[in-house]
Image (cartoon, one colour):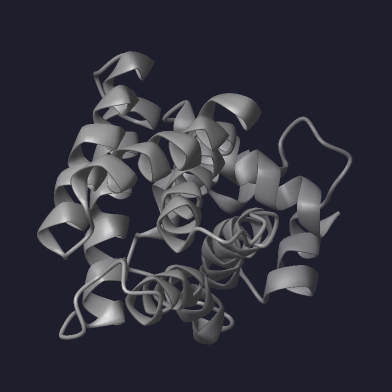
Length: 198
């Protein structure tokens, strides 16, 4: 029942239907009391909706296998982020709505940590300069993925816009110390994950 309500609320957001306690349960076999039982009210439901978005993102990032190529892995994580947004556009829209907190704020931090670890591996392997801060590089990578997919998943641009990801990530990683030829191949290999599961 909890999942049903979360999915329904996300769908209503996407279709721009007004969400009230009554409209949320309309047409279902669920009573308004269920919203209080499972979420403590509408504010709790919004928190749960955001939480579900980060939970699904974390689960998606966890499926990215670690290879011997950390630049490929970092790229694959950005591709997985984009895939998650495309597969769950309703939840993606509300994930970054700061009007409501999260039930578990650490879950959001944990998603970024996947990228931080890949960036750290890249630095240790000599692919990135020693002075590169993994958190900064991970954040910059995330920004590229977020910007592109926001324009596609919930915005006005066609899916082909995501093709710019390889160019943008390659430029970022080369500026961080990676060698152009090696970098280009790693990014291409990682970005293929977007096509493989998208």
